[in-house]
Each structure stands twice: as structure tokens, then as C-alpha cells.
Image: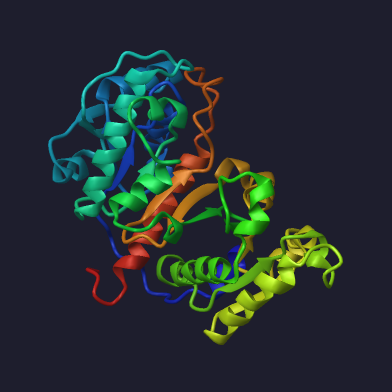
Length: 354
């Protein structure tokens, strides 16, 4: 996939410099704070754009100590100050403190996590930061402090004024990009949710985002079937022929390079992946199982269809290892790198500041 994406790049011109990214703290009892600090410590060698943490200086300092990292963490009062100090210290927009214990989430930590998410989102919507990266949260704890959304994706979409069904989740790693058409719904409900309009609409949003944010001029979409063998001419289900095939035809009529419905069991081996830039899958596990099998430590959750760039590491709070120095920063670094690169490409679009 990497070579294909590179060959389809929209421009060989150097990408422009951008302002800092905003990184929300996540749940302080999870691995988010320590991964933010670890990512800053590796930012020079990883080639990351400058970023500012939004949350709590004290939480980040404690996370660094528990991880054995000797880094400077500095409270800042503005984004300009964050940019000025980034090379020597991790800048933090300090929203206050929270008493917490790694691995033991509670409502105090959830309140801080929600405040950080909201503040980081608003900074990016206002154009003060160029992209949003969200550290993992505990949705059950957030619900106890008034969070009414299924997840951070829906929260950010609502803040942007985008309907939840127009915000598309893409999982991206070095070897695979995958989009689930349906996400957090019971498996038995999926067949009734798969419609020609839904498949075509989410695939089209994906194609536009790959062009604008990933530099792929003519993205190639592989559309998975819902049923075994993509229905095998109706023997194993009718949804593939009745709903998915017409969606593929509509995409092709709109000039999008789409193929399918394809048997999902043969879509993810190495040779098959060379033939497309993104896999459009029909349900959560159809997309996330191959993604996590191939790119677990570098997987990024990207929200497509928004007026801002938003990424997140494709893992959860990992409460069982929080504070033990065991969490690997690869996915956080990948999320930061991808956010920066997408923001750079979007800055080259007509009408955007370069």
C-alpha cells in the first residue's frame, strides 16, 4: 500500500510548514499521558510536527516520572508560546489538576479528560492549532460526567457541525487502510443497516479525503462483500447483489475507482493489498481484525469528512498496563505524524493558507 500511495501522490513539491497540533490528554488513569510524553521525547528522531498537550502539567509530569523519562514539561499561555518552547520542553495548556491512580479510572479523571478534549477541539476549530490528536478515553467514565456521545469521533463531528453519519472512521497503518461502513453496532443489526446509499456515501467521503489529506490523486477502493464469498450469487445472502453492487456501480459512474463486492477472506493478503489504497468493509471487525493483525503498534484512527484533521492512536486506555512503562508509543507517534502530514497536504489545497 505504501508504494501505491506514493506513486499516486498529488505533488512532489515539499510540504509546507504548519503550526502546532493539539493533543488532548485522554483519561489520566490510562496510558495516554505517558505516551504523549514519550512521543515528545522521540519527536526529533520521529520527525514530528510541533504539538501542544492540552490537559494537566502535573499529570504529565507524574506520567513521565513513572515512565523514567527526564523531560522538561512547561505550562504555556498561548499557542505561539507553545511553538517557541517545543524544541526544549513539552508545552502544556494547563486546565487544572486531577487526583488519579494509573489503572483506576474515576469521574475526576473523566472530567479532566472531557475538558481537555473539548478545549483541544475548539483550538483546532478556531484555527489556532492545525490538527487534533486525541489520546484514549474511557467512555463508561465519560458517560458518568455527562458525555452523551458513543465516542470521541461523534463528539468531534458534532463540534464541527457534521452529522455523525457523515464522519467516517478510517484505520490506517503502514500496510493497510480500512473503513468500516457500520461501526459500533451489534453484528445481527448489520445486514439491515447496509444500504446502497450508505456504502456509496461513506466510500465517496473516503475517496475525497484520500485525495485532499493523503495526496492520492485517484484512490483505488476495494469494496468488501458482507457475506461469505460476497454472497456467491445469492446462495449465501442477498445484500451483496442487492445493496453493495449498486453502490460500486454508482461510485464508478461518479469517476471513483471502486471494485467489488469482493470476498473479504481474500482481500487482505500482501498481493491483494497492492491492488487498492483503502478497503471499504461492511462492519467493525471485518475492518479492524486485519488492521490490528497487520499494524497493531502503528495503527491510527483517522476521522474523515471533517473540516479539521483529527487522528487518534488505534488502541484504548490500556488500564492494565498504565503507569508501568510498558505501553509502546508507536501508535501515538504514528497518529501525530499522520495528523501533521495531513494538515500539510490540506494547506496546499486551493483556498487554504500554504
